[in-house]
Structure formats: structure tokens, C-alpha cells
Image (cartoon, rainbow, N blue to C red; front, top):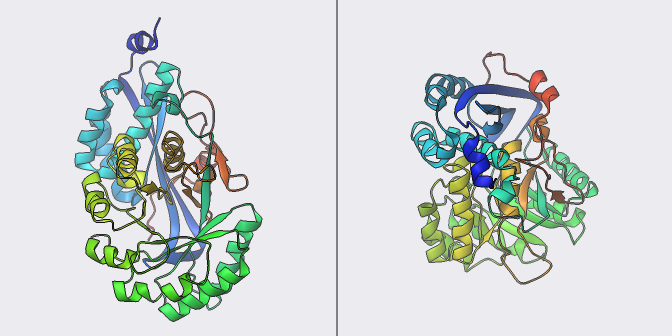
Length: 383
């Protein structure tokens, strides 16, 4: 029996959808130029078919409205649908709630992979890279006077733990204060550690240019991330021609068409789509392929979501190399190293700054039920 015939005889009609809203209140707030985070959340869904094959998905949004909308509108729509109509199902869900479409697409993809007896990477045509480099993503700001000292200490700890790349935040303090923070950090870290700085769209072009004096003094930069709002394409073109390190961005862009002017205008060097902000895993993979077709690097944004990051790693593992240089076969993926128990919901751990992908059918890894059971949101208010 062929794989297609095997899938065809299974009853892949959706019979049940389970939801797991999860919440963790932080012991200390941390943040970026957008403000402080006081909690971390995750919304897991598990779709089960009549054949007993299940698949997991993940959604990130404010739990009260997400949970109500998903249970009252999306679950009734999903029940009875055939999983092999995945693309059409995800498209309809996306019209109601874009982030839910991402989660549903993950779950349906895993079901199809399991039904075919394949890993997700095999379903997509095969894994090209066995390991994916990751960078330690830090939220630099605290509500205390010693925030810089805390930031330096945490960055050094991540390097001691094996990370070869780190990302730190700028744009939430004055340029002078942020530069004092970053300059000291660059002097504390080994020269071989690469550093990215992320301004979260906090500057205009003139302010972003003020960083060139610091950029030009060190050779171990990864990139400058989103110094300005991403719709200012012409300003990005001007900035790109006047600074010495790569420009990166695009985490909040939903459609491929939004990246098009950036590519055509030569406004960035590195695209950073985020699976949770696209129309689902199929749309997300189109983002990656589109960047490759235009000759750009792709270093995906993936700060929220443990399962979303697993799928991001899978997609990166199936992406052709961007260069012929044997030292840079594939671009790194973001790895949240802040206080966040949901990082280990689907337990993968980087070793020396690289993640080896799980083997086995579907995603090849099961969720940590201890975390799910311990951190189930009880419906109480939070902000």
C-alpha cells in the first residue's frame, strides 16, 4: 500500500479539539522599547481525528478573548472537517483570527505527517540541515537602577552556557544610555561572540545613524534589527547605505506582499518573518522561499511559542543554504532565554548554540504535561 493509499483509508475527520490556556506571572518584569512584560502565556490546542491521530498547535494572544473566540467560533467550525483539506480550513480560520490560523495549521500538518508515517520535514520534502544554530534572545530592560548590570550578567551567562550569538535590546532609553550599555557589553563578551541589537522600531533615520560610530569599532555584529517602522522603505534604503552592519526586520509583517517593497528597494539585508504572525505554516514557508528567490537571508523571529519555534526550526531545516560558504550553511533562529517556563513545553535544548531536530513521525516530541498541568490558566484577571 502506498503512502497516499494509507492516508486515504484513515478517517481524518476532526472529532475533537482540546484547548490548554497557560499563564505564568513573572517574578521580575523585563522588556524592550515596547514596554515591560509581566507574564508569559501560551495557548495550546490539540486536534484529534476519528482515526485517533492527533496534532498539536500553539497560539499566542491575550487569553480571555482568544479562549472565548476559539471555543465559541473556531472549534464548532473545525468539527467534522477533513484534515486533508488543510489549506482551505486554515484560510477560513484566518479570516476570523489570523493567529489561530497559525495554530490550526500546525496541528493539521502534524496529523497529516503522522497519518503518512512521516516526520514533518519528510512531509515537506526532506531535511537539508540536521542542526540549526540559534541565538540567545534577551530582553535587556528592567524596572531597577541596576538594569545594565543585570543585562551584562545574563548575556555573559548565555555565552558561558554555549551560545555563540546573542541579541540585546536598544531603543527604550536615550541613545547615550543605550550606547553605554552596549559598549560595555561588547567589551565584556569574547570577540568571537556575535551580537545583534534590536530597537523595536523606536528610531527615525537620523537617530539610527548615531549608532554607526559604535558599529564601526567592532567586527562581531550580527545585525541592527528594526530601527524604524518597517513601512518606511525609503528610510531603510538610506540607512542601509550609511551604516556598516546588516539591517534586519519584518517580524510583524503578515503577508509576503509586505516584504516585496523591502526586497525590491534593497531596504534590508535579513528578513525576519514570524510564524505566529503569518497566515499559517504554509504561508510562513512561502515567506522563506520568497526571501530566497530574491537572494536575501532569513533569520526567523520566534520569541513567543515553544511549539511555534519547533516548526520554525523544521522550516529552516528544509531551506536551501543562502551561501556557498561552508561556515554559514543556514541562518540562525531566535531562542528565548528569559524567564519563561513555556520555552520547554516541547523540550528541545540547544547545545553549544545549536539545536538538533527530533526524529520520529510528526514533530517527534511530546509536550511536557507537568508544565501544562501546573500552569493552566484559571480564568482570573491579569495584565
